[in-house]
Image (cartoon, rainbow, N blue to C red):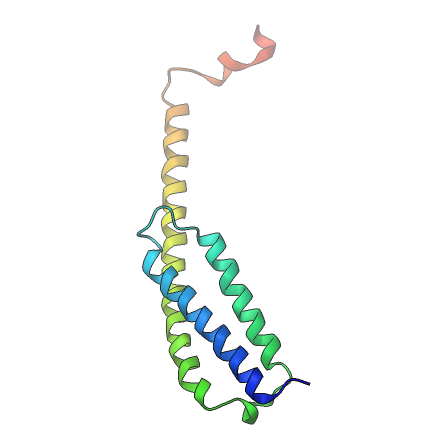
Length: 122
């Protein structure tokens, strides 16, 4: 059976990794065109899953008070992260809408008609 001390170390390690991932993502999202949001999101999800598994059998009074402050700090970073990811997704939607409108306008510019591209007419 795992001791409370080893569980605390594992929780602390996961919280540290999660914080590092959030800091990296919050800094790079919307700024670095090479940033891989999908991979970063997978890493965040993995950390949250690990935390759930580590704490699933613990009652709230068994959780070390040392983690309360760190958890609140990470919650603030998660809220910032959520806002940044939502803004990024909204920007992506806007670009897609612009491209869709441009394609529709190009199709309707009168140079070519749908009739000209029908196979049955040849």
